[in-house]
Image (cartoon, rainbow, N blue to C red; front, side, top):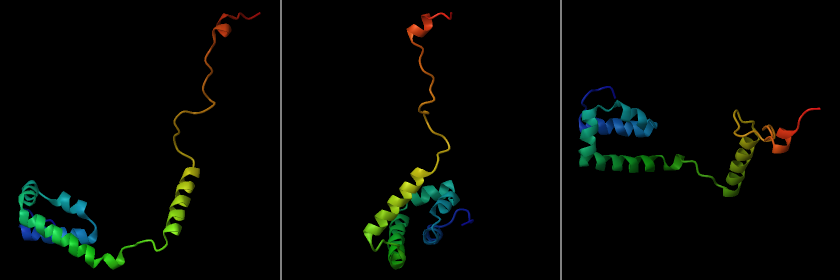
Length: 113
């Protein structure tokens, strides 16, 4: 992906590779301004990327992780949430019980003996 001013075909090839490897952000960062403008206005590139997404989805459909037992999946998620809630937080807003009491009028007017 280091070529400068790549053709639409080369950009599509790089996009497909990035989609397969899961590094689309890297592909997007590699674009020059001219390339970005070209692919944004190219109907050919947009149609081809849609086709690549469909083919990629079909190719990896059998490898997708789907929970077989929804109840066990939900209980696992709930256990993770409970575990995270038990961990101490680095910063807590508003400390309860440690605030200074407001001084009442009676305390202000009292004089020491």
